[in-house]
Image (cartoon, rainbow, N blue to C red; front, top):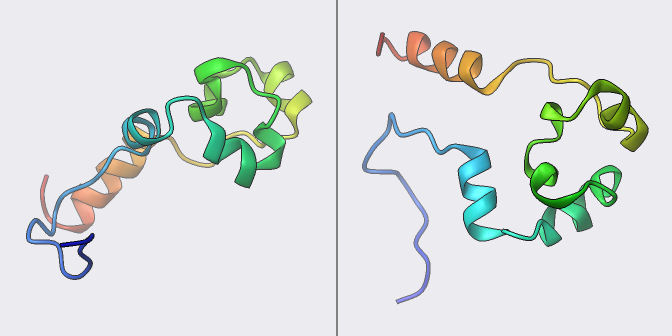
Length: 83
């Protein structure tokens, strides 16, 4: 049977985008193709460009983060009443 889609049996599950990217796109080929400003990112930094020094990140044309992953997760949990 092929891939499945539909309702998740674990509605409060949150997938970590960095972990997923490293697992399914370890070399960053997909990211570099579809996020052209990250084409020049070195190594695994392609999966966490917000951790690059400001000057290097700006040199790639990648913006500073609006919200961090931890804060986003905390907001999600609070909104779902999971805190």
